[in-house]
Length: 364
Ligand code: FES
Ligand SMILES: [Fe+2]
Image 1 (spheres, rainbow, N blue to C red):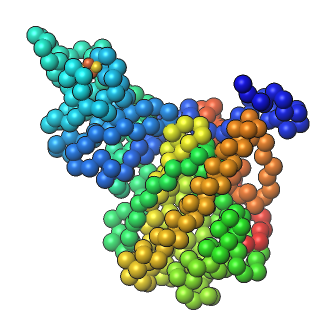
Image 2 (cartoon, protein in one colour):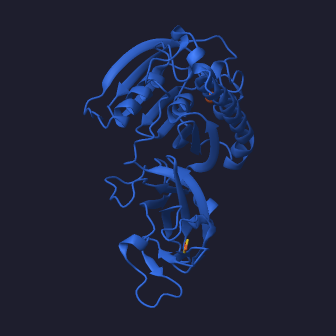
Image 3 (cartoon, rainbow, N blue to C red):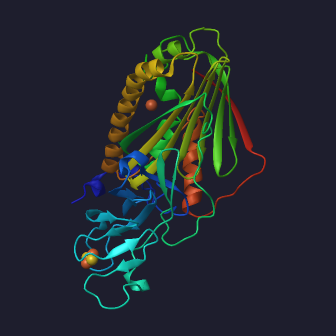
């Protein structure tokens, strides 16, 4: 039985507050898995927005995505196997093409097809090493998935990583784009080892995306900053961005030579669990293998610290029955992301041609 009713009213979240999520935004693309997880020919069970899905790749390399439930007797299709250009259920052997049409019913004399015998299929795309799914069955997507800005540019190396975090999409997106915690939680790895400087922040809001530009930021003083921009007087350009409903992006230019774009596609598995697919693209004046070898353990350590704090936050949100946040200016994008997600959940996204700007100063 829940202990929440015993909490004094003053520490209980307001009725209906719950946890910020986007479990209802189904008209958008989400990354379901890495291309390499599906292999050359393969079958994989994945969850996107709480929907159990089966993904499969055919002999010709085409990818299909179905609800993970056979229309015949409802066993998971993820237990099946690929045959040519179709997926065969392991129980009675019904076979479905990538569009979900039933193309074979063993033992049946006559036509196998018909709407009631279709697997429920979802739009799917493969690009940049990710398999994207549009979790709205049978729909025609109005857009294509986000394309990585460094795609096709041979000067960049891109590393893909996956992290699973206990936390809502909002909590994980805010964490990915939150500057103040880096000097504490990741002290010494990224920031927090020198005296803070006062810098300008400009937040731009287009209604369906927001950006924070940090002006006058010194080179990050931690180990990562020293490797990426050896000169301590390098000019730093730093942008953090959030695109509804599930993309976070951090861009750093350090001097003329180093450029980093970390794009995180976040896929809610449930209200309290989010899988983050990170694409780390970089161009640096050092051999990219060396940079990978040095930076990968630092990046993993940072991700691990974030995963621990997100799990603690999620556990506490469960204990207290929801969110009760206090914010300041320096929670620059956290508040904006929350507002955008709430408007997307209600289906009331307002888009502005000219961004609404807010400026303030902060110490980093
Ligand atoms: S349950 Fe899939 S073919 Fe019967
Ligand atoms: Fe972090």
